[in-house]
Length: 120
Image (cartoon, rainbow, N blue to C red):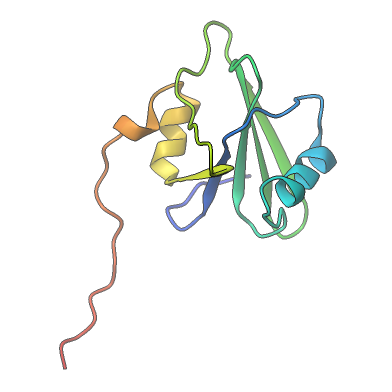
């Protein structure tokens, strides 16, 4: 089972991916186009050209998970765009909003908790 936690790094590929690719093809895309290690434990999110479907690739230490969500109507209206960067990083709550076909940039959540160091 995949569980999204605030500590996970979630990476969204800016350019659409060919959805005929399976695990091996998307892992190769992570290495070659995104310059990331697909076995790092990061969550990689890809979109098809028509923006009707998302694929999520993650390695859990034993093997890869490949999940797909296809909308029955409409398309994912939000997607990052950049001329210089190949990826955009999301927080876990932003991915949940994206999976519900929402706008992750508009999602509001409490700031990430950080430990306070003692004053000495």
